Image (cartoon, rainbow, N blue to C red; front, side, top):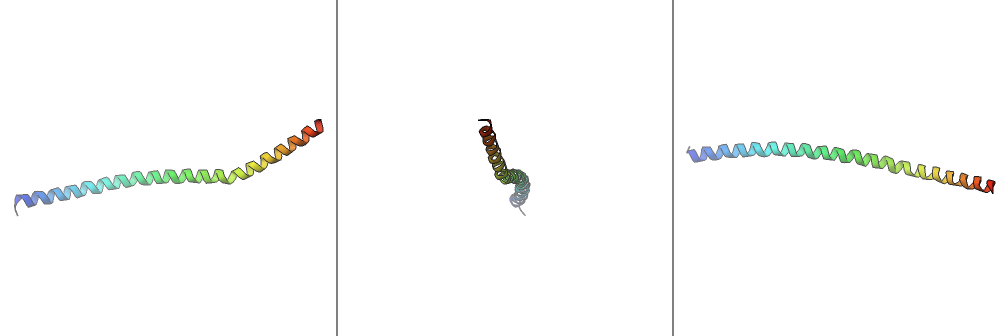
Length: 73
């Protein structure tokens, strides 16, 4: 084989290795970001589930305050 072909094959193999390594690191970063976003979405969903309960409690508190104000008057 000529030197040009050997150099081309070596360059191709090294380029392929570089691309594979780079892609694996990029994929790891992407997976980490997805995990973080998933955690944030779960936190938001828990908050959204609790809000109606809090709103009902606030409504009850306001009613009790109104009753107390009426008694004071």
